[in-house]
Length: 293
Image (tube, rainbow, N blue to C red; front, top):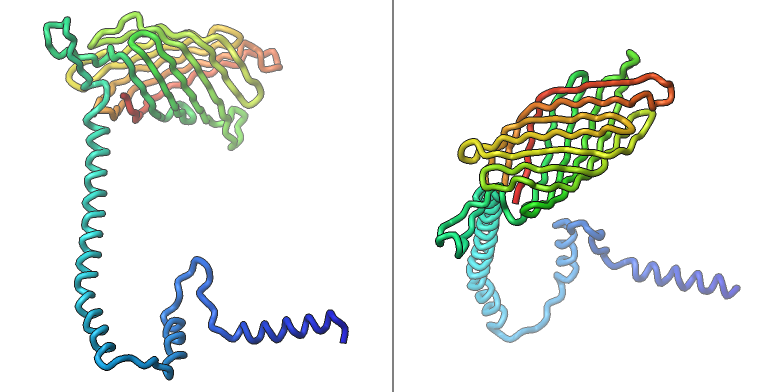
């Protein structure tokens, strides 16, 4: 017999011997009850000798210990549930109890009184989303801003989806991006007005643009937690973009609910390659949700 056949025969015998033992459950899968019972039945005929009374004492100890184990398990579950409830309450208290809307501080030179800093916060962060229908389609915005008492940064992304103008069932997608540096030349408790400047881009089905962007925005307190917000942005070259909106914003702590109306004009100035000026105007209502800290 060749050495290869000898090795193969030995491996086969070892496989039969070792494979006769019951297999464990597959990785990631619970063992079935009948598998564990079979394992217990295999040793049913064997019983180790023990001192008289030891077996009964062990069973009695196990019985006495079961209620204590159940009580400890119930207590641990109750403590976990209480911790989850406390964490949830703390999270919602952080959302609805914070935010710049209720921010105040005490300045020594301000007669020891609380000075509200609502729209004149030394540092604020905002993020949010808003969307709504426009003529022949819909539009949605994502925005993010970081701002000190005067200087800040504003980033925005707008996605527009409208029906194709060739009579087909297709959809034309337009993506607008803006990155602005902002300067708040009015920074008071009840009103904030900014001048903005930066870069804007527009990506249409057949052409993309990059241009200089200018803007102005404001936030003013009307009554209680209700604010009025307005914004206008212009890109004069190489394409033309005019984007304006006005909204009411309700501050619920750090959570901000807003709704308003928006108008947008896009003009490619004949830069699409066919020498024809393509101009579109979109307008419609929108609603939004954001956070402000």
